[in-house]
Length: 342
Ligand SMILES: [Fe+2]
Ligand SMILES: [Fe+2]
Image: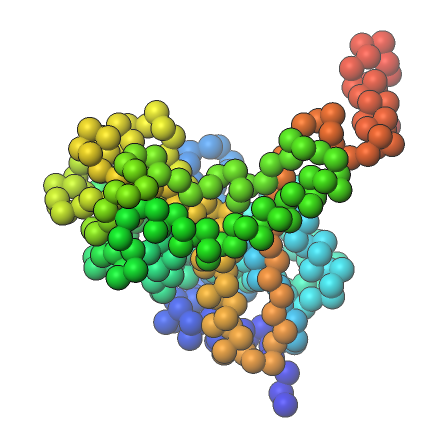
């Protein structure tokens, strides 16, 4: 059997995305391809360009093992390198040095013989999974609501098994295995003797922000607040879709004090916070990996999942490393110490 190469992975990604991967020879500039996009919130020097496809590596590189993750970090690179993977595919766009622990990305990946692919906006909107997980089917959608590219809204009809707000919360808990995650965190808390430890998926949890567990759900407006959705957009959406009885926010959340919540309350609409961004590895990463397994059955795929915990400083690590931290801090805080570089 001929080896699977990076070129073949690109072909598979093109089949999965309906040909949304730019040709390798297209200059990577905004405007050269619908999915070569600059992401920029106006912070000087921090803009990045999404370039779906092969970011680092040669087209003829054989790829027998590949890790699939959401956001590239030095942590992920170290794991992929230690596992001897041939490539990493991440969903979120990669930024040189920022995605690789502050050092230039290419030599770091080459050190471990890793190719790198990214696939973000070019993957969005290709499957109905996020709506499905949140208990509705999309009847209509707008990916540029209010004229803002990426400001996505879904108008959905509740699935037959969804009758009320609590059914959505229960569904998310079941699909995201909250019970198992609790068991894992409880065990870690016990082992580390760190009762205050928190973890993202168990802290940013689905909940009902307005309405009651029994509030009926039929017509859903599903929004993603981090994409630029405002209370004004909510008014506009409700004018267009007056049948809406339930608003779901997911990927990101709204604060209780936000104008969006105030508007929902004033109109008596149920408002549910769904999955957070920490669950996107299941929402988008898993379908992408399953599609790749179908397209490239001989490539061994590993899911690279990030799990972030928070602990109070005093409970971080063991006593030995705590002492180390305190000793090193003396160099940083003693005004009489020699501050020259060590
Ligand atoms: Fe995404
Ligand atoms: Fe994302």
